[in-house]
View: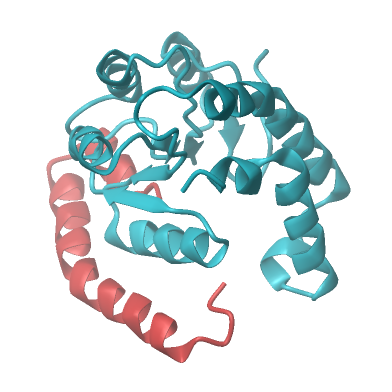
Length: 174
Length: 45
């Protein structure tokens, strides 16, 4: 799925969000313009590295997939279905440990979502193991968390996160 | 979210019906043991 990088590009994602908003989709029409701008800025920051990975190759086909590591069955299924509808190739696992195995079996996957902590591994442990297993210089992890306490945000930063986006509002920490 | 997809809605509702008893009993157990951390973990999406 070499074209996945193009699908993951900032321009394509924002265009898709704008198109959905124009169609009156309720979940996207609630997105304030500032959120779209922040999304665009975030993805613009990621795009050069993703494009480089596509151009240079890494011996594994340069697949860019999204790994959902989520222990809640309902959230897992919702994310899986929605991301597939948006055209992404998705690897689903019920936790970080299984996610690493799933990613290895299916080829590289861009870790896309999970809770800050799950019963087995922490996000930081997964990130370290994933980077080692795939020889990847960067691991992009989007953590969606309802946790908003200062100590939770510090924990996320200690895990290597540059920004944490709290569900419902954005909480820049850099 | 369900995009006029009744089958998807049915699947999610079924998943909820399958999982909520276990979730509810976990919350009740955490409350009975006074374990706020476990309780919060179960309540957090």
